Image 1 (cartoon, rainbow, N blue to C red):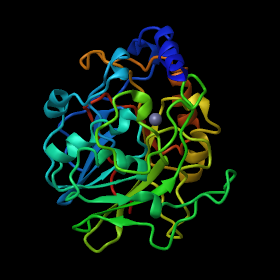
Image 2 (image 1 turned 90 degrees about the horizontal axis):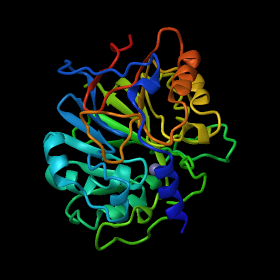
Image 3 (image 1 turned 120 degrees about the vertical axis):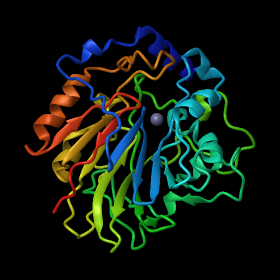
Amino acid sequence: MRWMLMVLVLMTAGCAQDLSELGSIKPSDEHNLTKPKLEYFGVAGFLLRWRDEAVVLDPFFSRPSLLQLFWLSPDTQQINERMPSVPEATMLLVGHAHYDHLLDVAWVMNHKTPNATFYGSRTAGHIVRAEVPATRKFEDAEAKMAWLPGPTGPRPIARDDGWFTSSKGAIRAMPIQSSHAPNVTRVDLMGGSYNQDLKALPKAFWNWKEGQTLAWLVDLLNEDGTTAYRIHFQDSSSDAPYGFPPDLGDDRRIDVAILPVASWVNVKKYPQALIALTQPRLVVLCHWEDFFGGNLEDTKVLRGEKDEPAMYRIVRTTLPKDAEIVMPMPFSEIALPAIAK
Ligand SMILES: [Zn+2]
């Protein structure tokens, strides 16, 4: 009955909030930028094209309503209309296996990114296998993840061979042990894991079991193998120091930190501790908008979420002066900063 609680809480949290809830914060809404850029699909979904490859993060388009949470299936019409075909995508990364991150992945793999290898937790792999044939490659990110020695850190430690490199060598990605924020009910309703391949995608939302939650470091590489950009991505807010990038000993500053807003008040020292450590040049705030049904032409602020402007202010006051914050509208684009000298 605990899942009932979550739906009840969400329903009593009322309607999604108008954008005016954001006060003076104005979501960015850029289009047709020249590269390099992030293309935002909403929630925690992004596409990043680099050289002749691309990486896709947490693609999710279906946005089922609260009632549809009991009988989920990918909205293939939405995916087909909203996601471009990206044959150059060689990596598809996911942070955890909840439906708002994984529901659409099998369809995307089969119809939009025919050449992408899937990287995620074992649980995410077992779920996606229900619809993705064995000929498509799955990489177990848990086997390579930078690991946290204890809940107080100080920060995750990279393995000797912690990077996955894309097939053409333009992108590499390192999984990092992270954790998942409790949702509005403060109870872990969708935890757990799977240890064998599923025969069909789960229907009820609580069967989209979280698995190991991961953050990712994504390096966009120059032709000589040096790092042009380093991006830190997490798809759930997390207690510090879970998800923190390991010290790679290369003194490379994080260029872009992608941080979800959802449930940010339910975790410790988020996001200020991560920002203080990484000093990113650009922060992209995602997972801020309501994703329970609704009209994509009329974006609303996530229901049940407390005080998004407060998180924005914390980011602003923790960030270095030369850094920017962007809170993008779904299906808009975000320019990466100029390559650091
Ligand atoms: Zn989640």
